[in-house]
Amino acid sequence: MSKFAGINNAEISSGQAAKILIMFAQGSAALILPSAVTAIAKQDGWLSMLIAGPFNYFILLVYLALADRFPNMSLAQYAEKIVGKWAGKALTFIYILFFLLLSALVLRNISDFMSLSVLPLTPEWFIDSTFMLVVIYGVFLGIETIARTGEILFGWGMLVIVIIIFSLFNQFSFQNFEPVLYEGVLRPLKGVYPILGFPIGEFVFITAILPLVRKQDRKKLRKSLKTSVLLITFLSVLITVFLVGVMGVDETSRSPFAVYDMAKNINIEEILVRVEILVAMVWIGTVFMKLALCVYVLAVLTAQMLNLSTYRTLIVPYAFIIVPLSLIAYRNVAHSRVFAMGVWTVYSLFHGFLLPFLLLMIAMIRKQRDSSDGGFPEIKPQKSQDAQQTDMTNEKIGTPDQEPAKA
Amino acid sequence: MLGPIILVLFAIATGIVIWRHNGGVGRFRERGWSLFILVIGALYSLAILLNMPIPNPTDWISAVLAPIYKPILAWIEEGM
Image 1 (cartoon, each protein chain N blue to C red):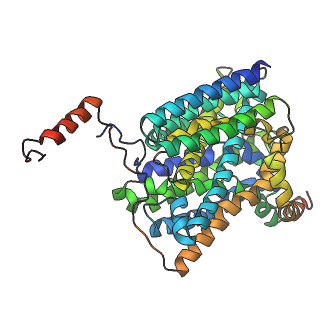
Image 2: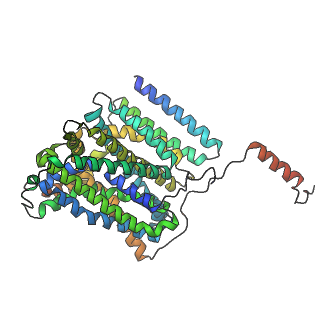
């Protein structure tokens, strides 16, 4: 393996791509989303989560159809092929703004959570900056490292969910679900609205990850992503069912971080108590994954739009924008909830569904396909000064298998 | 006043690293764009630290998308 392997044109497996998708979906959404859905759909919130599953898969189908036509290119690259160079660059710029804001909002989620629940006296800018330092390092190491981190965190996340679920069985009450569908199917359907934007519309990040999936793994990709959609839906339903079953509708819809508050209820014979910090740890891990992926995609799209040879030099400069943006993005937690659950869905679906769908339609009408490589230019190891000098001497006197240069 | 000074110093240090590293390997285009984004970010941070009136992107988006999302929200909140 060369010294520069994995820096730019890294490869991941289809399983890693699926786990990345799951971590992205669970990051920030798992803690915040169920309360918003329960506020709309009440005790039928779990049905909203279930209904959102097919939407989830449909959006992924659009990305997969684009990836079938342009297997080695990211959204920034095939947008230029489909709608022309400058229109494609303009489209990529729109996505750059989207991922810039998304990164800031995800960072704000974590600082809100930390300052409200775990570190109330620590200033938000300090939480943001320290968290961003870790993210910068992760993104700097590349997608392979992010994917491997995701694999580790995925295992821990599943373990914590299982611990929480088993520990809360004794407090679960089926009466909290009654009456089922008391206002018909309309209420659960309305509950799907926040899920469409958060996280389904945000899945557009995967368009920059799909070309990095190993070529021999591409056949398994569709199956892996289908499994990940099933798992995302199952986990969302499970979390919502337990939230309503343990805390009831009112408490769930009022709580800003419902899963964290639910974990506070765990008490098994005074032996297993205060395990909510486990939730916090796993949630910080999933949010790290989501933020790292957002910053990675942001830097990669920018580098591809500007025809740069590497994305890594853009990471720290972008951190200078993301941190202050996260500080002013929301005035308070209430504003964040109104924006995330009301405005964000429309904004996110525009980027996550409408634009990719239009690109796909245009590509289908024009019958465009291109399997050329859209990766970054190869980075070759620089020769040392001694080696360069030897080369120059060889050029002058001619190498052993060459004729000496004529005067 | 300590915050802005630290920020400016940190931005200058980052700029020097970007300048030297990219210049050393002949990536002048990368250096230019990185420094451009860095300057925007540093100015943005500085403006916030000095309490200057900064437009909030979430307010912009809310205002632009109001004709679309407000009717949807009204429909969702109907009967709640």
